[in-house]
Length: 464
Image (tube, rainbow, N blue to C red):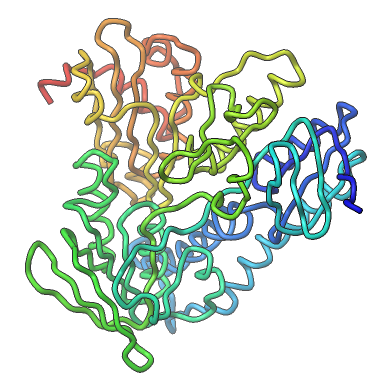
């Protein structure tokens, strides 16, 4: 006799950033909700992403501050050392606390049933977890993503690390070779160099972070190289081979043969969605060629009553985009909202030190669109706060539509850029002309006080 499915008003698959708050909102509205988690409560951000990596970055910055303290007149007698076991223990404590809080929140919320195990669809509105089948008219897919592993000869028989397994490292790699040159790669590169490792970054293209403007990529490369990270661009034909307790890496760099010997290899060549083992072939849910679940402007999939939220929908790969997905769905379902994905302004940060913050369009995109635009640029060396702190690396760029005077985008690379950028971002959301913030009085001495000055020195983009 076939067991009848357990019926709920809603099922949420995954406990990443958008799943838990949505489950709780639905439960508080009186709905019976099942939320399914196969292993790590809190998803990527809590376990292998933002929280643990930024905790590591904080430890690496502390080491850097001590190492460079002499420039500020602070003498460290007897030197210092980085205890990687204590660094990892601190990271585990911070990350573990967040994970426990998410699980406790869900397990103690009335109307929420936590189901542990791997979920697979058996039909459009039925999901199997172990021997149980759960059914609901509303299902929310929040399964996240994982590291994409490239097809590199020899990699199948060679030990390597990913952003997830780096969380298990409690030692200092002698020579960390990072394959990949984007956000994850650069954060780990600077972090482990500051801890004391020799670090080499291998990037396939002609610049780091391919989606950024060339001047931004060059500034990031210079930052890393100044701190002792070796950056190799124009790499192709990579092959790896285990050689005792080492890894031999062969390749071409700008067409010439090149070889490296590494103690450890980190693969940081992108992400892929966790949709390949979800049983979607038993449904009418459509995916694109990369495996991302296709959604419309309100995050509905191709099946009525099913939404895809978070990294698995390909509409953002950040904690804040995932959380915004939750806000859109919750507002529309429970509060008669009319929120849309297309209302969202692209915004993200790269957490090198100093950080890179990006919102809206960059210079390359504006030029490709042939938009009449104005640009303001200011070097961080001309910002009092940066000068006082001895952190003058970087610059600020902001782009304005020449006709409407609306802000099109901005790139801030420098001290506190990840916080300063929000005054520009909020002006974009308000759909107000740049003159609104240009005329604002900001506090001195801050980095933000230079935003009005930056906007007061706009020039046609073509002349820059």
